[in-house]
Length: 235
Image 1: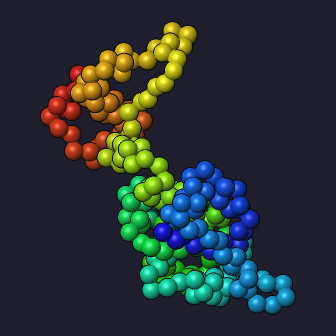
Image 2 (image 1 turned 135 degrees about the vertical axis):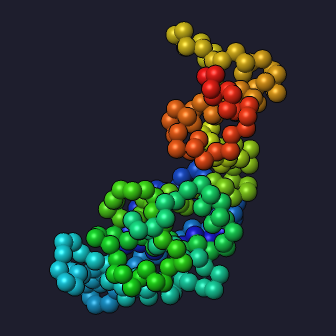
Image 3 (image 1 turned 30 degrees about the horizontal axis):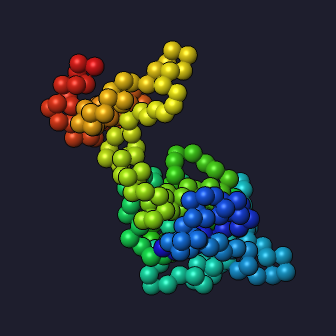
């Protein structure tokens, strides 16, 4: 998989590229991540990439020409282009799974007050990482890249991702490690019982409880079995 990030600030990704999972994916040739400096596609000696908006308004707008020229330089027939913008569809785990089918994903990171609206028509989809405003699309680009990298086969064990939060509609069950007893707070004994069937059921039940406690909105859409409903009613 190849991920291309169009950005005004490629230096922001230097540390990100050294992160363990990202580095592992690159070393194992499972993913190629590149950053493209949009400024290199801005004309003039000062390479101005932004300007004041027509019609007035606060802030500066990224000009469409440098962004679209940079996009044209890296886009191919197999590319899937994502513009990171507040107007985009909220990003979810299912989107990470969906994007894995593309060989080449291009992420356009806006900045300032936003990008010229003409850029929108050149993207295959718009994506938002949440209903809040950041100074630019660099952090969302890292978020999406990380979410894809960790799902690639060979980066981490598939068992580690198959039962995570949001994969099956619920939050992941609570987990524990040593010590067994920390100032009177102990690990649930069932996890040390060796009874795998009971442990599996306990994990599912705890996922139900944690989801109800922390993300009840997810539980509303989850297909509860009669056994699940009875358990929640009793607890």
